[in-house]
Amino acid sequence: GGGGAGGGGNSSKVSLAEAKALAKKRRAHREASALDRHERVVKLLKGHTDSVTCAAFSPNGKLVASASKDRTVRVWQRSSLMAAGKQALCWEVPIEFDYATALSFTGDSRYLCVATQRARRVLFFAVRGSAKPELKKSFDAAGHTDDITAVLTPNFEHLPDSVYVVTVASEDDTKVRVWSPKGDALAVINTNQVRHYGAAVSPNGRLIAVATLQPEVHVWAAKMAKTGAFESASKVMVLRGHERAVTSVCFTADSHRALACSRDGTFRCWDVNVRYEMREDARQMWVCADGPGDPYEKMAVSPDGRVAVLATQLSLSFYAVSDAGAALLEVIALDNVADGPITSLAFDAEGTSLVSAHEWC
Image 1 (tube, helix red, strand yellow):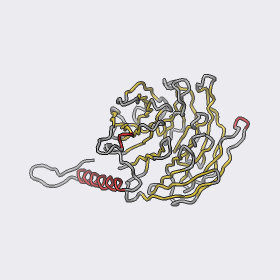
Image 2 (cartoon, one colour; image 1 turned 135 degrees about the horizontal axis):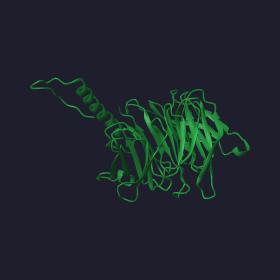
Image 3 (tube, one colour; image 1 turned 30 degrees about the vertical axis):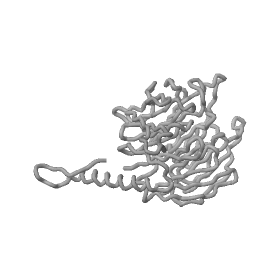
Image 4 (cartoon, one colour; image 1 turned 120 degrees about the vertical axis):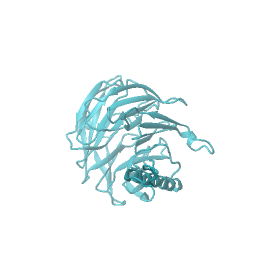
């Protein structure tokens, strides 16, 4: 934001636009100070000048990346964030004439995958050592008609044969698209839903899940060739039980459990480690309605599957989870700390830290 007094000649009047900009700047400063003082905040990553659309840890835990409507992607060296008396090492990557709506790291932490809003392109940046991220390749996500809200890669450790890229869009674009890292279109999945809210790829790369406006999560199985390359996808299960839109879905690290949250104020867990090729259905293990009661918008689960964090527009709720159910640990109110909804949540590989991206506007 920015602001200040202005006008022609000796006039001291402030235009409406300037007044709004000044108010925004003061509010951002006040809220940033509140976040700095919050007991649960380890580090506030500053630098973006517009809404933050997403954030993520690299699988090896060494990097944190974020994207913003300010037309930049920022990549922090995590070890430098807590170094006393030293400035954090951060690379700012410009997205020319565009901005990133989604990002993720590849499983080997060597590449940062970014989806852009206007051009709807997928960009691969090499993120190695202490060097600035370097654009290595890109391709058009042809066919998408709305903003790409998720760009996903499975947690495989080898490139490129066993890696595929999934892009999911918002609003009226109900087709999920699967690509090779080179940009070859591998599959188009029409979910036949009104709207998509969230998506996830299981860490083993076998399952692709999409949360929808209908109170369901639709799951496809990826068929892989002997070489590890993606061949096709087929629908294998629908996770039901919610009463309102499902807004977020994620898998545990072993790919055996899927968790999803909804605007009905509950979240649920299913056993998806089933013989779906023999038409065996996923089994709902439990539902948790113990929380703030507000609609859930985002969620994340720790890699060991023992902690789940759920976001409403005004709070973060932490739960201990197991195969037996979920127990509320803590609710952190955000109404005096952050302005606007949380746009993404992500754990690090150890499950000891959580990064949240916030819509500041």
